[in-house]
Length: 180
Image (cartoon, rainbow, N blue to C red):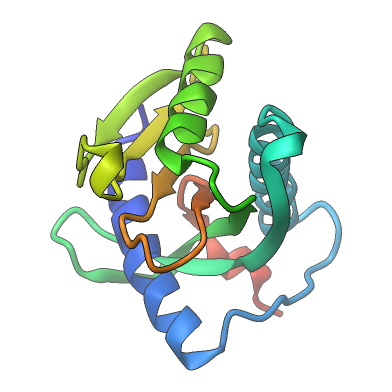
């Protein structure tokens, strides 16, 4: 696995939170064929494939939350101005009464059966009765250190409708090629 992926995911999660709060998660265009465009296409396909693997009768609607460049952290944890990653994030809202943890578990199982492996887990609350939650990061089969991972999370707040959070973040790339 690319040694920067973990840092990219951590940095992307932090930046995604800031962008969502500030409303600055807008799209930007770059010429076709750029690293940015390639990563955007790949992360979009990764998230779209995850949504397609879910039972469509359970889905109420899907919100595109983020589809943009995010910063990367270096080995020492500091921001790297010349490095970026692409992040694509969607909220998959499930029909009322649908158990989000069960749907997320089924999605993880499908991905693992397709050869994806679990790279990280966290923040698991096992009890579905009390609004359990899971967070799993998967990497694709035959990972070549440049394939985006897939993060699957559910919320534990039973006051909101059931939702699954999907995000795919590319590996970090040199963003100086994006500058004129």
